[in-house]
Length: 103
Image (tube, rainbow, N blue to C red; front, side):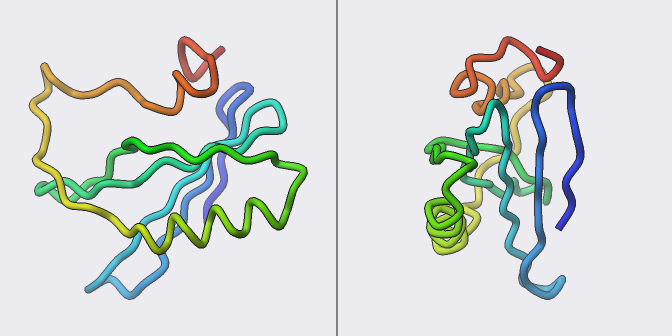
């Protein structure tokens, strides 16, 4: 698992299966709240945060563990690779009520 800080938002991610059959899960923490979006795999092979986004309190370890389990069970749906001019904005920012990663 990797966790790295962005001002006021922390992102964690993990690859949970061998390279031939990867599963990617990501979560973000801001103001004692954890956001777990669906991680979709594009045809190009990279991952995008997608709806739905599950939200739990960072202070509730059991709720976070259950949300992480549900994220793993959802897996990584495969989606078309977006064009550069149509690349989606990060869905987590809206849920975190942030305008950018720096906020």
